[in-house]
Image (cartoon, rainbow, N blue to C red):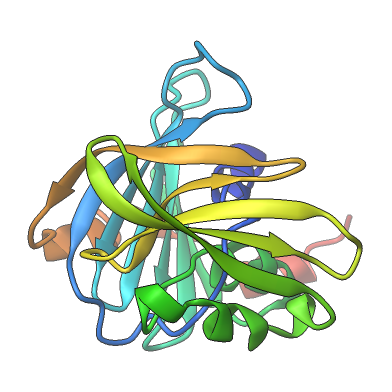
Length: 208
């Protein structure tokens, strides 16, 4: 199940990262994997200021969710089938790749390349604005980027959300659909009642 949650987070691997503080709009949406057309939606995303939740909708393994709090730099993994959760720093190397580098909130949607180029992983690459396009009936600004390895990718920023609603690249392509703007319930970003916290320290001390 944890592997499934990590994969859901990495669907955003080609999107770009910037500060999550002072988000312009809260919203929820469905995540659609465009590299596998015709497959059902496998995740939902909930965005609330400095928090984000990625929730699996695949029921085969009991589902689950990852919650990241960018204000406290912590994350929580919910294991629905086991009714358990675990907390950890969001600054571990793996989570930086899966979460912090996964989402791009632009300070200026019309000039987003500067935010992209601030990322260390993008040094040596190039970025330019392509123009305006409509994605799912929403106005967006399209960008083209090329990383240091020469891989080309595209992302479409929604000026109202200041958030990508579509991304396309060599190994990851996706889109946000059924976007619902509005305040998100605080309960979405907390451990549900009845869930037990996993003792990470105890697990590390157990003999293999």
